[in-house]
Length: 134
Image (cartoon, rainbow, N blue to C red):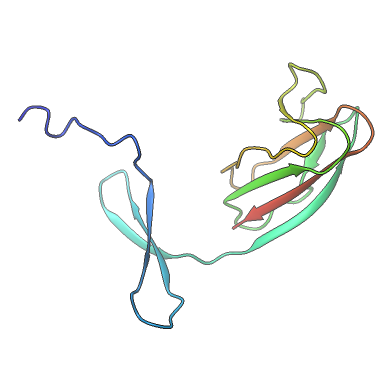
């Protein structure tokens, strides 16, 4: 009995997505458990935006230049011909400079709101394609 509330599922999700159950409707809802244990329900409404950014070598470049309004997350694909390092304003093109995204590779998905990520290319030819979702 003492362990009853101590066991946790390591696959917990912070939210559930549920459908209204009504045929031919597009009402998708997100059910979120708050820190107090209370549940709230919100509709999933937003925008997906894809842009490409040329990433400079030698100077950190904001990726993207302007964040999507109410952005929740973003993911990047290195579509260029050189590696790109991701980080803050002081990111460097070296093995200690940030998170390396090689050519034809994806970054991890970032749940960062409207915070800015910067990138710097190892050489000329740095291009990333960004998918943002709000």
